[in-house]
Amino acid sequence: MIYRTVNFPIFSRIDKGIIQNLSDIIKEENLFFKKVAILTGNYGEKLVTEKKIDSHFQDVVLINVRKCKDISYIRSFIIHKKAELILAVGGGSVNDISKYISMETSIPLIYVPTILSNDGIASPISIIKINGNYKSLGTTPPIGIIADIEVISKSPKIFLLSGLGDLISNLSAILDWELANREIGEKIDIFAKNIAFSSAINILYNFRKGKYDTIFESKFIEDLFNGLIMSAISMIIAKSSRPASGAEHNISHAMDKLNIGKLHGIQVGFATLFTLYLHGAKDILEDVLKLYKQFNFPIYFTSLEISEKIFIEALKLAPFIRSRYTILNKLSLDFIIAKFEEFKRRYIKCLTF
Ligand SMILES: [Zn+2]
Image 1 (spheres, rainbow, N blue to C red):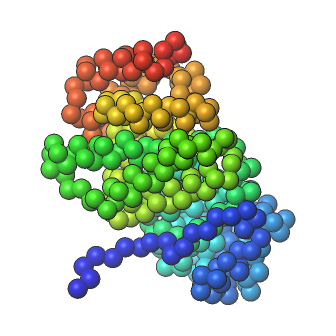
Image 2: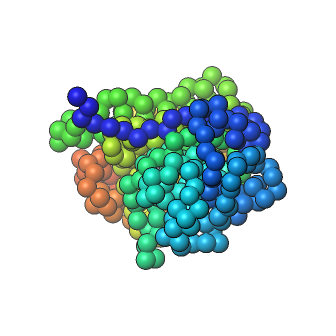
């Protein structure tokens, strides 16, 4: 008897110049669509109109979701045009809107990312602006994700760093999940946990083997792409963001509340250093620090452009930001602040003013 169903991406592909062969790749996956709605941002629109993307579909409508912001209008337009596929080309917000419309219309979605900044790439969650406020909504993930290494390697470095931070944060998030399992008996899904862990540890493993000289290297972009998809899949299996979101995400949500306004992956990637320290995971922490330093990930308050004082405010707020048990709930606030001073002295000494 089937008592549980999951919506997974059917395929993912990454290669150099792959966007020139989009329609062939989709056919190779035994997927056939005549009418396609291409949803883009400004950069994605440029790729399509300058024919840098192959769109040899029989019937195509192009919608720039940055210019046409009315989601219900886009949805009605796509239904009216009888689109059989939504092809999203762009960054996270294009994907979020496309996932949401895909869920509402039941039209399958294939995502072509132009940046890799977080694990929303294949997750069943969309951050959508409703009545001026951003809301996190359950959606359906894309059926396929196709990334072009040449496009991603030309994206601003900060987005790759953000994707790295969001992926690395899994290493801390699963320690929180294990802790919640021990301390309050929260159910843990070992399958989802193992996928979340291996997606992130693979990056550290290949870094230790000397496989990445720079962040723009094909091997790193491939590992990041595959890791972010696996991370999203761990959330689909767990039916929760738990495998990829623990105390470091609570700190990031608190930073959002305090209007710090940095990229999600940069915030969680930075907070992960401290939450790994609180968990006593010093070997992993030191490897992550080496990787961050090699890629120039912002690990100092000066490079993050936030004050230490406001980060401490975020630390104080984080345990209460949502009902998710983490290391920040187990330890007292005084102890956490004392540990933060110790962490600073050991790892980010001299550069915290
Ligand atoms: Zn995240």
